Length: 107
Image (cartoon, rainbow, N blue to C red; front, side):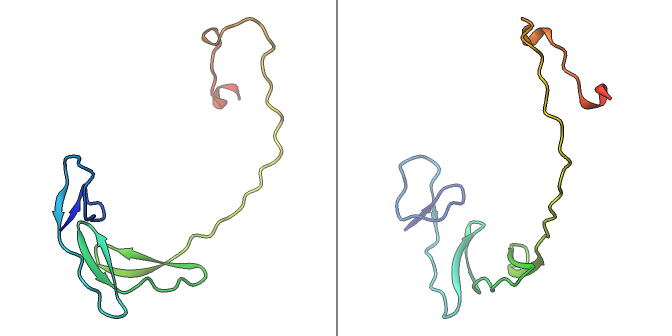
């Protein structure tokens, strides 16, 4: 018998804590298919297709099928060099005596 806790992948034994529930036995997969535990049940599905450049296959739980989506392009943005931050000299003030300002308040 298999056991699951909070939807975890079923195990043959528990760790002795409360909350474990019986899980159905793992079915055998037909040739060319795989068995995975998803949403509290065993799912027999095709293996993930090979991703191609710019696209990625993701499992759609609602349709119970692989769907291909465009992979986001990353754009590198260069920032201008900014001045080194300046700090108050050692004035003896404690942090609760300082006033914090937002950038908008300083402009």
